[in-house]
Image 1: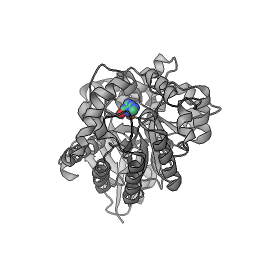
Image 2: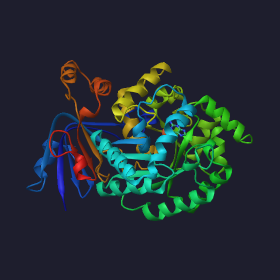
Image 3: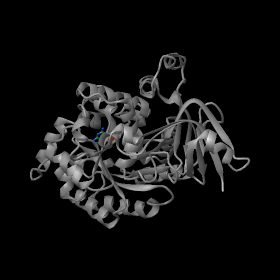
Image 4: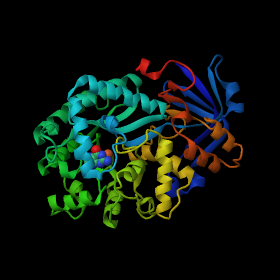
Length: 444
Ligand code: GUN
Ligand code: FE
C-alpha cells in the first residue's frame, strides 16, 4: 500500500455551519498530520502525536504557513465556454445568442474539444478544484474528451451532454429521441467508471421541448444513481419566457418537477429569483442550488439570496459554482469573495468560514457526495488543496497583522487566487505542485 503524509495547519468542516452553527462544524488543527493511504485519508491528528507512529520511511510533505483543506468543489461550470470568458455587456438571453451558441458549435471539432478539456482540467488543478459538475456541449464527444482525461487523473467529476432541441441554432440541437439515446450511451460508457458520474443535462427549460424534458425524466428513472443538472431562475426575461412556454406550471421550478427532474443529485444553477414555495420544494425534494456569484454579477442577473435558501425550517443544499464562461474566475477563492459581496448587498454578511464551507463540503453536500469528498476525515477520499497564506508579498505583509483564523481566511479570500494554491492532491496523488515539477499539462 502507498502511504504519504501532509503536515501543516488543517481546516475542515464536519456538518453544515448554516444549519448546525460554526462551532459544531469547524475542525481546525494547528500542525496537523494528514495521512493518506491508497487514495483515502487514513488518519488525521496532531503531528507531534501521529508522526512518531508512522511506518518507517513514510514520506512527509511539510507545508508551513499554509492551510490544508479539502479540495474545492465547483458545482456548476461550462468547460466549452472558456473561449468566451469576458465576453461583456449583455444579459443572459442575448449573451447566449451572441457568444455562447457560436462558441459551442466549435465542439463539432474533436481537436478543439480535446484542447479545451485539457485546458479546463489543468486550470482546475492549478486552482485546487478537485471535483466539479460540468456542462459539456450537445456533442457526445465533448463528454468523451473530458471524461477520458479526468479518468487519467482519477478525478471525481460529474458531467453530461447538453440536451437542447429548440430555441438554439440547428447545429446545436438534438431531438428528444437522439438526446435520450446519446445520453443513455454515455451513461453506459462512463457512469460509475472509477470516480466519474454522469449528469443528465437539459440546458434550461426554454431550450427543451416538453417531449425532451419528459425523456430526460424517464432516463433518470431508468438510471436513478445518475445526476441531473440544469439552470433555474437566473434572469427576469428568462423567467417570463418560461412562464409563456409552460403556462400550466406553478413556477419555474415546477416545470422541472412535472417531468420528474427534482431529487437527490439534481443540481440547479442560480436560483436567484425563487419564491417561498420553490425553496420549500427544493428542500422537500432534496434538490440543490449552485450559487454562481461571479456569473450573476457579470451578466447582471441578480443577487442570490443565501439567507432565504438556508432558512432554518427548510434549508436547501447550496454549493458554489464558477459558471465559467459567464463566470469570471476559475478561482473558488475569487468566487467566495464575490459571494461575500453579494451577501453584503443582501444585508446578510457571509463569514469567511461559511464561504469556505460552501466552496468545499457545501458543494460535496449539494452533490450528495459528502460521504466521500469535501472534508478531511478518516475514510474520505484524499482530495486536498494546500493554500499558501503568504503567496504574494502583499498577502505575507497583511498576514502579519492577522490575529484570528477568521481574519486569515478573510485575507485569503480577499487577496487570493490561483497563486495561493501550493499543491492539489487527487485521490492521494499530488497532481499540481506550484513550485516544483513540470507543468501539469505535460502529465495529463
Ligand atoms: N442558461 C442556459 N444556458 C446557460 C449558460 O450557458 N450559462 C448561463 N449562465 N446560463 C444559462
Ligand atoms: Fe451555467
